[in-house]
Length: 278
Image (cartoon, rainbow, N blue to C red; front, side):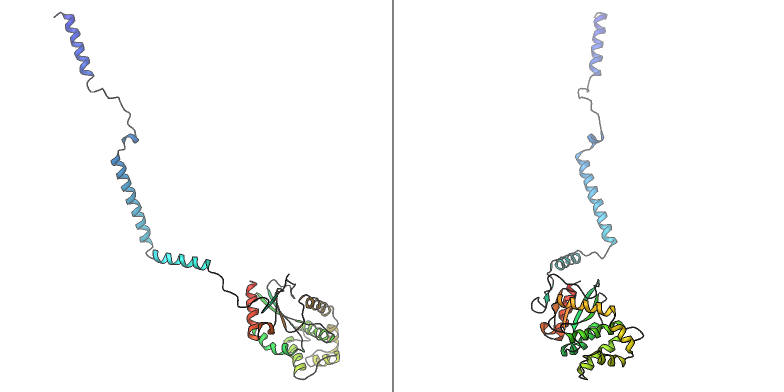
């Protein structure tokens, strides 16, 4: 074989051997292309195992956890939130009346005011005194009990002036115990049968408790007493007072022993109305 042909044959054999097994296209391996279905299954199993370990750790840290107790507590809270409020025992128009709109109060207090409109000469007022004293002796801090005299005729106006004179002197050196003197006025009328129609009779009574003529006159005709008399007249009209004793709750409600159905019922009505104002 000629030398040139031999050389050509050797070159062809060398090229054929160098190209064997390189017929696939070259690929670029990445983290994504390296992940196989087997790898995914193994990773999911590891995640579930980790979550189970975390849950076990939480439950182990609080051994008091009780799913059933928690469910009962949630059910109870929902029942309490959706339960209707207890029905009121007393009704407007029957046991009490409501003012529309509300009226001013005697003291203008920020709390809840219960006012008794009364007259010293009224038997019902006299008989209600012990009940009201017991009730008012232990009131919540947000409730204030006050008295206001009725003033629909000259005698009641004279007794109203007496009431405010005692109030003005109360707590001073001239009159240290006003409650005792208020009770003395009631007793003078209902036990001793003295109606205290004149200033002279009133002076004689107050003198027994240390109030001299000069002190009496100064208070009886004072600006304070006259101002409170005018207020009483105004509120008597606003509350439409036609009988006593009448109870006014926070300038919104009016009731009485007769309307409530008795002394215990009156106190119950007052308490329910007070609660409604909170």
